[in-house]
Length: 458
Image (cartoon, rainbow, N blue to C red; front, side, top):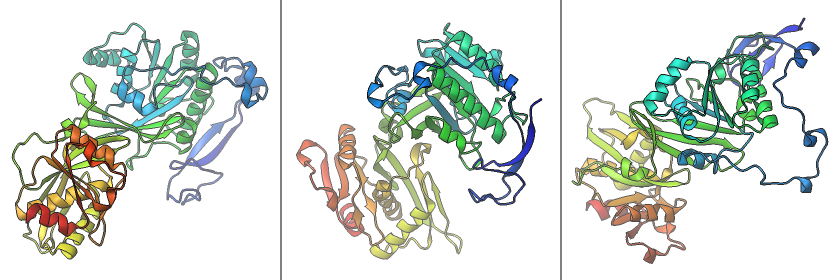
C-alpha cells in the first residue's frame, strides 16, 4: 500500500505547510492554502512506470563540457513564422513549452493549426474535448493531416505509454489542468497534480528528446493557473493575449531558455482559424484620409518589432463636478500624469473636461515612447484641430514637460519611412549618431511640450 499523507499547499506559489495557515509566508497571499492528499510511490509502483526511456550513456556518468557536441539536435521549423520567431528560430527537441491565455482566446486553435500543417508525426492529447469535437474544429480550420493523431485521455501514465509506442515528433497537451497522475490522490487541476503531471512530462521530453507543448489556463489576475513551480519547470512560457472583441492576438514570450524574450508574434482571428500578420502597422492604422481631430500616430516597439499604431483621444466639457477619465489600452495613471503636465506646463484647461483615450486595434501598449502621440491627440481634440495623417511621433514626456529620449529610434524612423510618412517628431536629445540623410522622411526635433504645441497647433 502507498503511504498517504495530507499537506496544505498554496495555490498561488505552490508552497506547502503541514497545517492550514491564513497568510502564505512565501508569497504573502491570504486564504490560498488548500488541503492536498499526497500518495508516495511504493517500490512496485515505481517499477510500473514503463513509459520512461532507458538511461543513456551520458546520463550514467558526468561528461566534461568539451566532450559535449553542440548543434547535433537541429530545431524543428514550424510553418508558422510568427511561432518560429517567438520560440527563437524553431522548436527545440526535448523542450517543454507552456502556452497560457484567457478562455476562448485561441490557444487550442493555434496548436491544432500547428499539428495540421507541420509535416511531422504529431500526437494531440486533449482532456477537454472528444475526438469528434476536435475533428469538427479541424474541418473548420481546413486541415486533413494524416500524420496528426488525436487522443482523448487525462491519465498521464496511459498517454505517455501511447506516446512511447507511437514515437511522435511533437506532443501537444490540452490542457495541463485536466491531467491527473495515478500516483497522486488529489483532484485534477490541484497544485500537487499540476506539479506531478508537469514533472512527468518534463522527464518524458528530456529522455525521449520529443518536444512537448502544454496549454495552461490562467487565473482572473492573468497569471498561469497552478503553482509558480510550473513556470520554473518548463523551458519556455508563451502568453497568448488579446481582446475577444477584436480580431488581433499577440503571442508574447515570458520565459525562453533557447531564445530572446523580446520577440512576439501577431495573429488575426478569422472564421477559418488564425492568420499570421507579417505587417501589423498597416492593419493598426486608420484608413481615413481626412485630418480628424483627436487622432495621432505613434511609432512604438513591441518586443523587437517596430509598429505604428493610432492613438485616439476625446476631450469634451464635463457635465459633472468631477470630470471623467477613461483609458483603453493605456495606463490610466500615466494619462492623468500627462494631463497634469499639459495643464501645468502649457496652460491648457483639462481640469474641467472629460477625457477619453483609446489605443486602436484593441492593443495594450506600455511603451513610454507613445507619450508624444497621446499628448498630440489630447491637444488636437481640445483645440478641435486635426493632426496631419502623414505625421507620427516617438518620444517620452517627463514631469517638467521635457521630451525624453527613447530606445531604438532608428527602427521607429525606418518603419515610418517605409510606410510613407512625411514627418516624425522625436526628442531633441535623441539625434546623437542619427544619420538623417538615410531617410526620405523629415525628422523634426522638439525639446519641450510647448515646442510641440506651437509647431502643430499655432
